[in-house]
Length: 516
Ligand code: GLC
Image 1 (tube, rainbow, N blue to C red):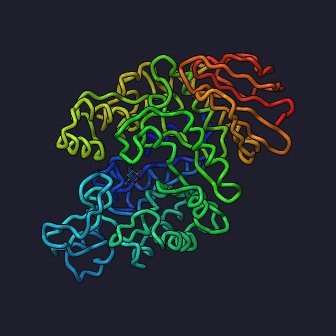
Image 2 (cartoon, rainbow, N blue to C red; image 1 turned 60 degrees about the vertical axis):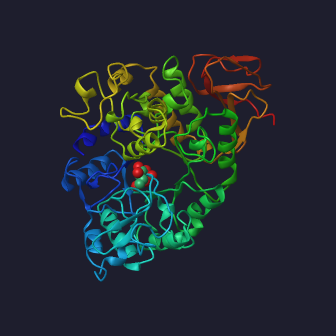
């Protein structure tokens, strides 16, 4: 907490309006804080409630809001509610969780699987019933059908709202309407009723931001969450683009190269189909995803160029952008050589499962180095000093070896750094209604690797052109521009015909007059 307070001026300089904190509540840390044992206490490693209150106030002084992670699909098995719940069948907290009889002592109620592999049901010896855990065994699922559970959650949310936070990021919120007996997990029938109830009892009518993590959302479903008339959430995180480099129908670990044509198609769909009814988030990264410059950019020969291209492409779209710590300085994945270096429960479980299934270590480590969640979770790189300036103690994950080069101090000292591209993009978004409200139109007559689109707003048109490859690409458009809004080169863009784009070149121009 105090570390973040020390860095608020840096974040102010970057220009952001809010900080989404991954869970900072008390937790035994089976899943990096996503297993909460007390929603109204701060994890000791992070500080105290006084530190938290100070963070909220100090951020507020800089016009930055604090968004809390709301993890209410499940708690930790060490949460007092679960400790009570498992103690006997007639405990008042029994129905706070999802308990079922097994088919027999060795056979769970059905074959629902946990996201972290294995059965989603765990036998509890005390009462000989099974409890549901859609994530780890230490993350029992709350029973949202019980109004007492929902009310306890709303009370907790109001506790945080009263502390002056700016909103909630809602962890796997699309699972809370589950009907485990019918094997329905995502998008259950009562999901939207619950969210409307939550809205009415907590943040509704207040100036708070709410964003739901909704893995199963289509544009139609996203409108249900985010149409202001429905009084649910401000926006969603949807993940369709994130799955494009995995084998269809398999898991995130089954890799295939990204096809830019598919990325264009998915982004265009979301840009157009939400219309005026829904609102989307824009992101490349978060604590669950690998670093984008290593994933879809090129972190060896074109780190700076490709990181800037990715930033420009994303920030010119319609929606609310989210930047993950270190993305603004082009931090990269950290390559591991051995499973012993891994902290993340998801990667560890997958490793054990695939070793048993006969995959080679090399194959599995390739998947982890490409997609594992620890890639993004290494300490933030502040400077070329011990532990990159993140801590004087021992960090929970090793610092990336490239910290002497890639760090905030270097980024701030170099006026051409990735940081200043992000800063400019954030500023543009705050000053240009076209970026916020303009319509989107994809250019279709380009090379596959060139991702180009228009934004149109009240008679003004901008053109965004991004070379999404490490090769030169041809680009030609029979139009002229009056102004370069932002670019990752020093070139002149007044004429747009017969151009050669350098690897990862990106630019945004104001068109003289749009010829549609
Ligand atoms: C979300 C979080 C992830 C966590 C999971 C279970 O997907 O982003 O980090 O492991 O939910 O809470």
